[in-house]
Image 1 (cartoon, rainbow, N blue to C red):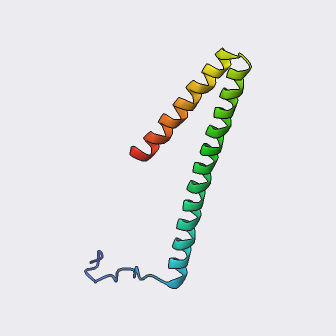
Image 2 (image 1 turned 180 degrees about the vertical axis):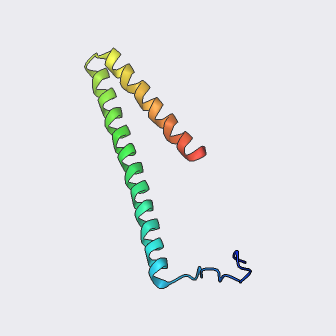
Image 3 (image 1 turned 90 degrees about the horizontal axis):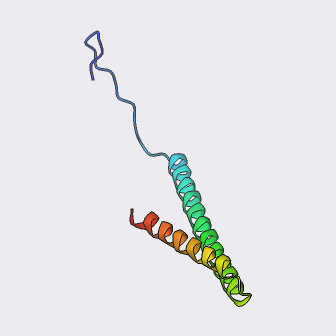
Length: 85
């Protein structure tokens, strides 16, 4: 690249260093762990909601059971959309 004076200006080196590679690997690993933790939390919550729905039905609380069922459906749909789009 030339600067205003007509001299070639050296380009900065983009060489990978072990420190940078380690940083990137650590950041990627951390991000993947966060995703795994989030997925586990959602699955745990879905399981709790399903148990709540069943308990509501067995106690005759059909409106509350329906609300839980709808929430389960919404969460599953949202999770599917996260992976597809």
